[in-house]
Image (cartoon, rainbow, N blue to C red; front, side):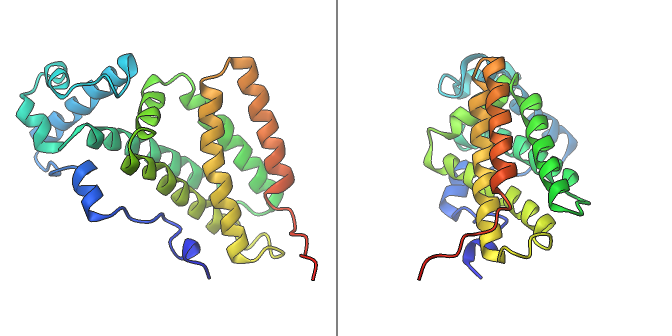
Length: 225
């Protein structure tokens, strides 16, 4: 079985990357947890208003009403704040995907659930300036960019586990390759729709759902000898 299937929860980021964009320390006491929440809430507000590139750590400390040292106590640099906010959105999307696919019993039902998840994804995030700002922020940093890929891998793993027994004509490796591809493309389509005019966005989503229904579980045509 290919390594992608073996690692369908996403490849772990290297230690060096995590040192740069991970939390420096995880708060344990209630006061520390509240301070971290204040920092992230202030960061989300600034990103929604100005975008990631315009956010400054000193400005963030002022907005959160905490000493600048407290910001650096948790976050080594701005990219680590973007990762923390991205992880919040990714966890919500992964949880919703798992809930939607928890009890699928047929391929038709699985397709219905995927299309319903796409509608939920768009409805939940197309007017969310924090989500859009964080996503755009991940596009400017190599380590952050990998977060989207790893997130796609985790969603693909959830979907793959839910449907692998429902498509016997597709081998396990091929099924995972498709779920991984479609998972990543769904995120890209949602983000494109989110920055488009509403009527066009809905048409694009409808077109994308038609592609999914026609292609996701389609039997593979044997290659010519």
